[in-house]
Image 1 (tube, rainbow, N blue to C red):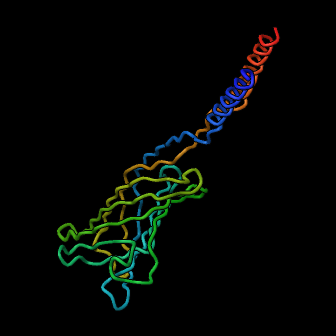
Image 2 (cartoon, helix red, strand yellow; image 1 turned 135 degrees about the vertical axis):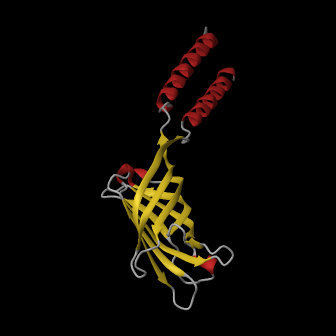
Image 3 (cartoon, rainbow, N blue to C red; image 1 turned 90 degrees about the vertical axis):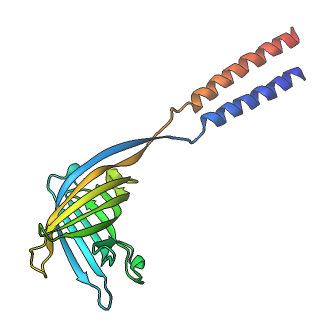
Length: 218
């Protein structure tokens, strides 16, 4: 009975140790990417009929942008004048302006490869009539990515300037100054200790059982 009870206890110990070693938990590391860049931009505003809202499309380019993300696009932005401030407010959810059935906007950074960043943005633009400029500022929230930026998250702040003395029907030409960072998760596998742990336990059990057997029959 003593030999049997020790065997049961030792087997239980082995199973407990193996279950710990077999835990699927992985260590999560974060790779942080600083992102400071200036894009040359074009902004196209198109009034939405029967509303006081315009749809905006923004494109940007910089051949020297970090990580090969030379292109930027922001589609399905919606703008309306705030009657309290006189500023233009840009949002990507048309429902916040009381519009239904229109697509929600999105932002994308991309280049010639597979690496991409996805996000959403909002901005406020004021009229600087003294210096004949539109001056805007806002935030881009990074919500995902592709390639090596899969699962990216982060915050980018930006400011933007466009001269007012441009042709009224042409895209607004200006510059956007972005600053911030984003991070991507990296799974780091834990050491594979299962087989080694199992082998040590089996050897230990064999040694103890043999000793118990010799003592019982000696």
